[in-house]
Image (cartoon, rainbow, N blue to C red; front, side, top):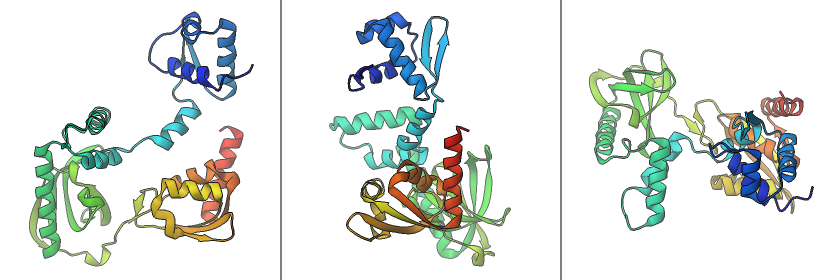
Length: 300
């Protein structure tokens, strides 16, 4: 079968994922192909590791197929990234149709209406001012009704705040109950109350490091790579801040070295361009990459 620049195959992908019920004849008619050609296309999808679901005479693609998982990981926004972009766009310049369309989409898909409302922003601004005052006086605070997505609880948190992060979206604190440093979202706290209690754990305060792929934490892992031209250029496009991490080795190779909090982001980058990247170190990252390649190779 000769592919027609993958145009009809992509159209078929859209049909199979548009949440509608389509029969073989319906899809063949919409694509302007024969039923036999359509079966060729679907067989091609199966051989490409897509999962086809048949429900009676209707067909759909399983969105848990590996392709969709990889696509989602590569292009999706985290809720935090969406909120950051939404605030950059703001509510001004309603004559800008592109900005207005982007606002509507971000609000709809990430449910940001409440978080970016003027009333909510005023509350966040008040909390920021309270936290700044507490940090200046080195006083403990209570984060009232903090909503945690990890523990799925809403509770007061008694903390020592010591650093605002991510342009005021987060605050780094030492939690008294657990004796650990944590990052809290300003948007998830109802209010902030200063206590008349001075810090008792200042020696334990540690800043969080944010790596090139926006993972934050206290523990840092050095990673050294040798990249070819393609990997070098794509890294600069994806992470412009990586410019200072490179040292040119020759006309077509660059040495790359920096610290990462998580191997997830840099690991995904290396695995996607493995033929153009040599992993020089560290040993922990080498083992991580080999384990991921083994899983992919064995189809686990």
